[in-house]
Figure 1 (cartoon, rainbow, N blue to C red):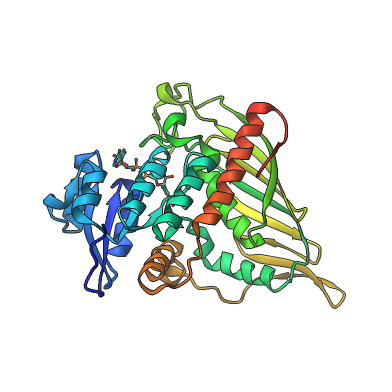
Figure 2: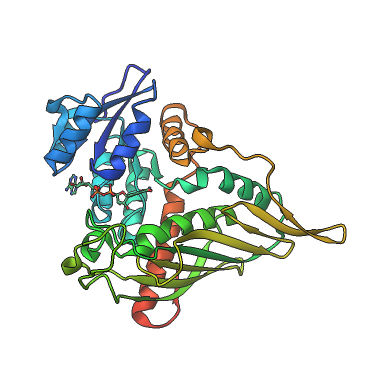
Length: 357
Ligand SMILES: NC(=O)c1ccc[n+]([C@@H]2O[C@H](COP(=O)([O-])OP(=O)(O)OC[C@H]3O[C@@H](n4cnc5c(N)ncnc54)[C@H](O)[C@@H]3O)[C@@H](O)[C@H]2O)c1
């Protein structure tokens, strides 16, 4: 059971203390109302590095996350393990009485995701998905415009998360058994979540798509940012393309690749509404006014630390848990996004359009 703090500091622990966990910790460590109490990771060296940086006692570092939960009883846990562990780690933490911020994607598939939401409900605990892009100023600007009806009916959203040569050469990002998929579930998920959020989180009803593997499973001597990835264990797609149909008739298309033959990397989406259209990055709205076609760019958007979407994601989670502030990234949104990912992968397998329940 979670041990209550003195009401001043949230007792916060980690399951998975690798790369992204370090980002979480860097923000949490600066918050006066958070205390980093424990870590759990099978990689002792990685855990020790973070423990030293953030002054977490060695006795509170565990190679078995279940022991950490039982002995420490944290009030909040970040789950930052490979995707295949998100469901068991999250469910165990919720059952142990902690609120959970689980990194994206929610899980390997929607079935696991639903079990996580059920565990949160059963334990009356908070479960948040680690989507950060919705916290950025561009996203807020566009979301407000959509909510104010500036676009009319949104008919179409085009999403792209494309790297020219960027297969991660660390972690297990090429392992389908541990990650559930490749670029679509790893980086496509980011642009999908923010575009879907800006659209107003419509309900997906069907998906179609395809995936291809043509490079990741082979040795490459081409110079690149992250050379020498583990091609021998690479079992995920290199390129995935999908289309989602929503209950309100809108269509979203998405392209995601670790290794696309394109001029340069793209991470962006655009909207087409009946009254206006928009681009996300840079944020711009295209409309007609008073007999002219206008391109509207905000005269000011926060930048620098004030625009740090990751900082805002971490603060929003702590405020949600400690002070009951609404979360901008409920697990339900993670589940909807997961259903879209599942649908694209299922369609790639079946060769036809699949429905989303
Ligand atoms: N929000 C973002 O922008 C973002 C960015 C990167 C990664 N992520 C997500 O975060 C998760 C982790 O990615 P990463 O880049 O930090 O990977 P990573 O490989 O750097 O870290 C994962 C950690 O989990 C540990 N681990 C593996 N099995 C474990 C177990 N049984 N118990 C405890 N720990 C275990 C590993 O030893 C490793 O330290 C993934 O789901 C990824 O999709 C999110």
